[in-house]
Structure formats: structure tokens, C-alpha cells
Length: 382
Image (cartoon, rainbow, N blue to C red; front, top):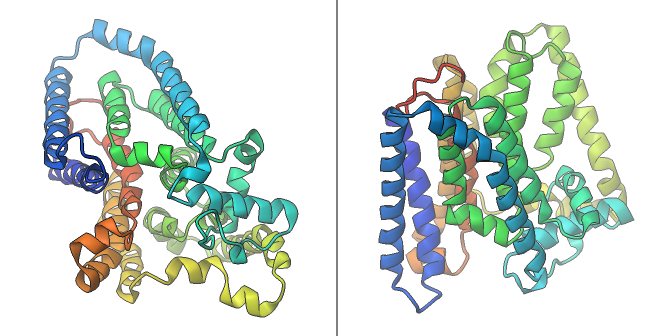
């Protein structure tokens, strides 16, 4: 097994252990360390079974697994939908859903969303495109349904692109066995779904335009601009996957892309910008200020690494590996600052740092493992 695979699986396990530690301490039924050891043991045992069966995969077993993939996925999707519909959003101590609703209502009803408190009294820091993304699910009655939709898209990708059934189920199992992922679904967060959509876009575009990523610069600029306006962090994988090719294009292509990008940003942002009561409010309360007020300046040097790294990596699959590491490093920069200033207990338990930002690296881990051939599977189809 590759060192990269071991590193990513270790990161995956450690982040989930942090979630178990934080939320396990809030109950008195089972000692938190028993929960942690049980989880690590379960993951280790599941991985042992996976690698053992992967080496001796039978054709009959593969047919059965393929046959029942979608029935299993649809049952899980129905369960997720039921859970989301039954959870009272107002009772949640996480405000991702209400911040997203404020952004949607800002677009639909002309209300400036960044000065209106959400259900916990905080201000929304969502970029405008996240609101557009959530509109269909808002109209369906709950923005949390976005999680179900993206889960089904991920399953569709695995079904169409991962040839070996055991690998397909392995990635799906990592998704389902993650307390961090299940937490995202329960609190109706958009974070994980946002990053999965970025990965799906990257996969779609590279597959369609393998030999020339900038064959359609206007369409590419529109899509990247939209994704950028969901969350600034997506620039990390976008730069890794697209900047080197951008730099190699003609001046005409560069200008076409840049103009299309900024024009799209303006068009998408316009309804929100026009709803601001005055320029002073716009400058003081906007998602850029609200999203960056806790990020150390040193974290932005990671974007420089993203610009340089592609020149030393030939295999694009490894971009997923480095995307996960850099996104995690971005979140860890804030974590260590708070840890130094407030200590372990205050930082973890008192919400000085949001652990879910660590799990933004998960989609890139999932896609790396789906595309990598190091898990004892001689699969040349992906």
C-alpha cells in the first residue's frame, strides 16, 4: 500500500476520533475512550476485511455487489431524508442551515443577508452562489436535503467511474462510517457537500477536456466563478488542478477566461449587492470579512504552495492528495493559534474552532482513494 494512502486513512481516522472525543464527552452512557478505541478497532477490522477480500475478489461476488449497489444507496438516501425531515432545525446548536436560508432569502426577497442574525444570533458568512445552490431544497422545505442530493451524485460517480465493486463499496463505507460526515447530515451543513461538488466538477471537466482544459474558457470560467462564490477554500484544489494549464494557454484564452470569470462573479453577486442598504454596510458586513476574520495571515501562504506544486507533480490523481493536506493545513493554522491562546479544552469544547472545517479534506481523500490503484486492486479502468 502506498504511503500516501496510509497518510490519508490516518488523517480520516484522526479527524473522526476528534469528533467522537468532543461529542462523546457530552453523554454518560459509555466512556469516551471506549468509544474511541471501539471506532479505531472497527475501522481497522473493516479495512483488514476489505484488503483480504480485495486480493481474492471473486467474479460472482462482484456481480452481487454491483446488483445491490443502487438499492443500498437508495435505502441510505431515504434514511438520510427521513432523518433530516425529523430533526427540528431550530433545536440545532449549529447554524449552517439558517445561514444558508438567510442567503437564499436574500436572493429571493431582496434582503441583505449579512446584517440579519441567524437562529443562533450569528451573521451569515455564506458566499452568494451557495444560496443559488440551496434554492431548490429551500423550496422543497429544508436546505438539508442538499446533503441527500450530493450523496446520490457521489454514488452515481462511484458507480460509473470505479470499475471494481469492492473499491466502490470501500469509498462508500468510508463515507458512512465517518462520524464527521454523519454530523454534517444531522446538522444540515453544506460544507461536505460543497467540497464533493467541487471534486465532481473537477472529474467531469478533466474527463471531458483531457488534452486541453481550456478548450472552452468561457464555460470553464463561469463554472469556476460559481464554485468560488460558494466558498473561498475551493480555490485550493482549483489552483492545483487548473493553474498550470492556465499559465500555458494563449494570451487570448487567458483574457477570455479572466473577463468571463469576473463578469460571472458580478452577475451572481449583483442581487445581494443591490440589496445592501448603503456602501458602508456593504464594506463592513460582507462574507469576505466574516469568513477571514479568524484565519491567520500565514495560512494564505498555502495558496503560493498551490501555485508551485503542480510543476513538480505529473500525476493529477496526486492533486487530490495534496488538496486534502493543504485544506487541512489551512484549518489547522487557525486551530493551533486558538490552541496556543486558549488551551485544548477551550478550543475543542467551547467552539473556538469548528472541527467540521477539518473534514473539508474528506471528499479529496475519498476521490484519491477511488482513483488510486494502491489498495491491492489491479484496476486499470480508473
